[in-house]
Amino acid sequence: MKKVGIIMGSASDLPIVERAFDTLKEYGVEYEAHVYSAHRTPEEARDFALTARDRGFGVIICAAGMAAHLAGAIAANTTLPVIGIPCKGPVLDGLDALLSTVQMPSGIPVATVAINGAQNAALLAVEILAVTDPDLQSKLTASRTTAAEKVLNSDKSLNS
Image 1 (cartoon, rainbow, N blue to C red):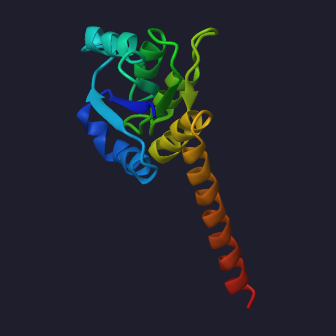
Image 2 (cartoon, rainbow, N blue to C red):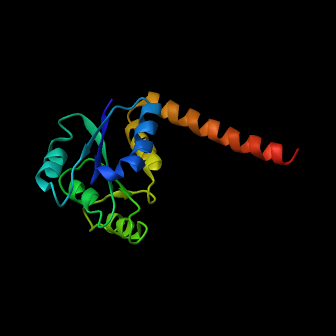
């Protein structure tokens, strides 16, 4: 199975990204995490993107706040799927990161989840890997079934 690369623009993004770690572990998906900045360590970020496919990665998740150029910088250097997590910052509550992540130029796509949406980023990565992995597909289907049952049980309790 391919693994997931997770890049944080700063160590301060770790509390957000930990939800992605937990979700990937839940599905048995191997991941590797790094702190690389699009601005302060551009060579390291670029090198990771350029070599990711050869190193067994199938998807890359990038978490960054403020100007949030990390996902775009990574996507510019790989044809692997890149998922951006815009992180809430101290100035504009993450809106700046969201807009920087979602407004990519044509030809360099970045899938973007909600502000601080690390769990959904990990689930999207699992869905991408599940396209060619029947075991992951089964786990996703079971998880969706369990989630639906919880909602229906809540409804039943409310109306009993």
